[in-house]
Length: 374
Ligand code: NAP
Ligand code: ZN
Ligand code: ZN
Image (cartoon, rainbow, N blue to C red):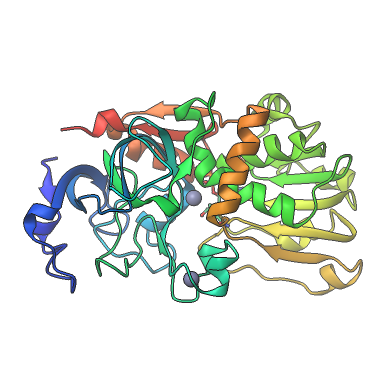
């Protein structure tokens, strides 16, 4: 499909901006995005600001595909502004930076995750929980940018400009393609394992072996937990063991859950589609916690007696702030933890989306951004 400029399609960066920038302050960047809900992704040209004094200009090398990208393109959460350029698992190289940048130099390998701005002064920002900024966080894509007064475009593109406060250092030795999924799948699973006390010897179940699930298995087993994978796909059993799980339950097989009733201290649910939570709660020990990180488009019925008899807890966890994301990257650097990726070109994105909708992912697609260059 022919490349179409977003601004010529009526989504002008400057027409929506109150801090109007001259045309010379904008850069045209090749990208890939969707023009309408459930429409196939295709080439687009977007505009980004030229780096200001505190900005880092990053040449994107790889961008992972998170199921949240798929939900957004499908408008599963009824919140998407089109055209949308997804992508929040970015690894790239610093191409240039503003005069006041102190933490990065040209050529550094860096990451950008889910967050590119926030107010920086509210209690949540000061605590490093920028995703809960009281003035409104700016996510990396499809989020309203307080400065430009436009919607952000994500990592399915060749370049991004980000204030250095939101840029992450990639530890030496991590392969850039395999590190890209750490920026969302990594932090989204690392943060709740910490919050809810994943300890050596504890029994941890991971439900759904996709992008988040496979990172949860790697991270929980690296913390010494005894990990069980609960999967609808029996053919992922060997991989589960290679990733660090000691046990595997094929949840669609009759009677499969009986053997693990009351077993787990923690359950991490990464499933992207509606499913039965009441059955899963029977797998928790008394006082155990089921952590929800999956964001299915439809609500699920909860039988409160499944919680009450056993003092069980159900909790949620939303990505992680910038300091914790850097902590997770440093942890992965020390332990040599990266994702299992299938590197694809831009013209394979639509196929990857279809495969993810059927649970057919091993275990993260990541886009080679060189294939986006015009
Ligand atoms: P993914 O790579 O597509 O993996 C999801 C896995 O869920 C699949 O591989 C499959 O595993 C399982 N699954 C899918 N459909 C299912 C069904 N109908 N019944 C049972 N299991 C099913 O997705 P992801 O990128 O890991 O994301 C997972 C979810 O987390 C998405 O909803 C995403 O939006 C959300 N998310 C949340 C946060 C947060 O901050 N909380 C951050 C990122 C993503 P098996 O084949 O093993 O069954
Ligand atoms: Zn994500
Ligand atoms: Zn704030």
